[in-house]
Image (cartoon, rainbow, N blue to C red; front, side, top):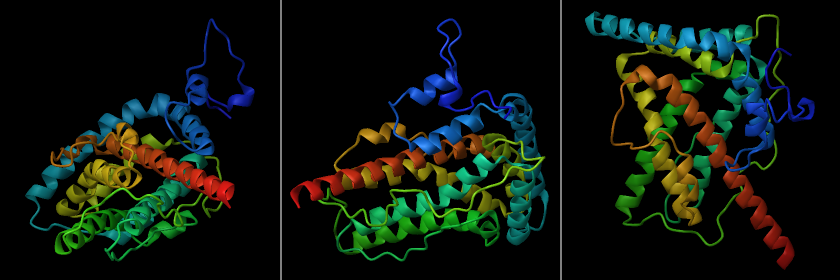
Length: 298
């Protein structure tokens, strides 16, 4: 393994040269599933992120600017979503690290369960749901990246139409329903590392962002990137149900009413993935606490 971080069991602490990844691994100030944290740190400490990302990020931004100009000047606002998703899946299989691919697959499960938690804990509303639970990379070919963004917008719209029409509000729930939250690992197939699977998560996202932009309409791309601004909105919903505002400090894509330009969308997407994992782990912890309390009173 060529990573700078190889797991806590292989690290010896040297006070004269402390390992920064080991410090982050031991730190418990932010909630995140331990297995996810280890994969995240291995990915972040990879040589790809250290040496390739500094070049990939400005290159991707330049491509976004050029494609934006082409989109404005072109008389046709084209879309090729199927081609896009097949291309992404091929790239993930061929070039992206196994840990990064697992984190990508996890994100669809995490997002679906967080939305399901909110929907099931607002009495009086009925919201159509479309949970996404890919088991492998091939499952992503069914427009899952685009559907993920649509699910988020549709959820916020449908939820708030129900709240307005029925004149109700999201309120704290004494005994929340955590039945949709998976406490253990998700049903995801083990990912494999081939000879060329060396690209880390953030570099992959940076390189794929202009490809995503090219194969979608300008409206699709703008909508997808600005869905990241709903992190705080979803966080507020969950925090209100739990009567706990503490984890909102973990939300990084703040201020949903302020639309941002698309140049930094890849970095914002990484923050979105991390805050989603942290939010989900908080729900898992709450679920386990509730189970412990029920068992002690049973």
